[in-house]
Length: 112
Image (cartoon, rainbow, N blue to C red):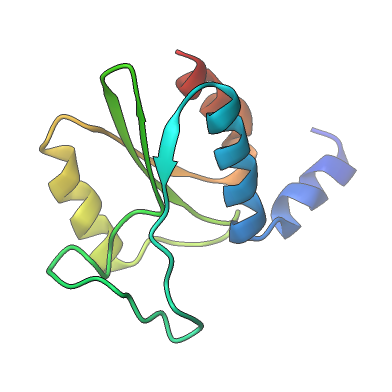
C-alpha cells in the first residue's frame, strides 16, 4: 500500500467510512439500517439491554443477515459492544468488525 493511501485510511473518520460501506452495500443490492445516537454524549433513543452496544450497521440481502461494527483505523470495541456482538453471533447471523483498511475484504463479503 502506498504512503498516501495508507495516510488516507488512517485519517478516515468512522462517519466517512460508514458512508463508503453503505454506498457499497446499496450498489450491491443490500438493505441496511443504522441506529443513530443523539450526539457527542452518545445518548441512544432506544431502550433495552442491547441498545448501548448495538452495532453500527444491520445489512440484509437474499437470506443473509449481517451485523457490522465500524471502527476507524485505530478505534477499539467497548466491552459493551463486544458483549452485544457475542450475543448476536449466537443467532447465526454474520458478525463483523470492519475498519477502512479492510475495504477490499468488505467488498468481497458483500459481493458473495
